[in-house]
Figure (spheres, helix red, strand yellow):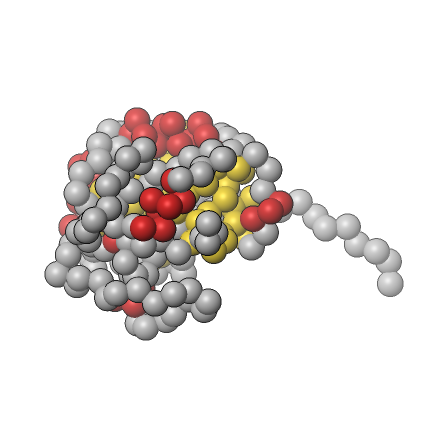
Length: 228
């Protein structure tokens, strides 16, 4: 049987309405020149903002706009653009109250438990310490982690750090629309802060990485929070 070389990765759908979040890999040590983010618990979604309508789809492509219509409206109002596509998480973690934790170098909200235990059942992450229950009376927030398109300009081939810069400029943050903090190694005592805030996982992302909607990339990889 002749040896087959793997072909190029398939091109993403041309229509942003068909895009899905890019999946994380599991090889954090192979990520070149990484940035590091806390990993949010919750429902991973893309929010597509257009002049006349805003839609939210999850990783399976399910349209959940009606269920989170207040988030859709808040994301559209917080975005300084006529149109945009945002990658992020629906989570109650940012709206939990902090107790005994002083935020210093990043504005990282409290994380207590993965939000999918609240929203989509009781799935548990194996190997992670149990956390106190979330306060279900707290509002759900959207935490943006990436910007894929803005005012009709596709950013998929733009390096991640440049997309991060554009994301910070594009979002006017408020209680329910946030932008995730990130740092470049070494992160030192910041891990202590994130751990104290309840985060149990971190994500390594190559600073020059591109984005393939619906694809899988080992340039984005999750890992357990180091114990020290």
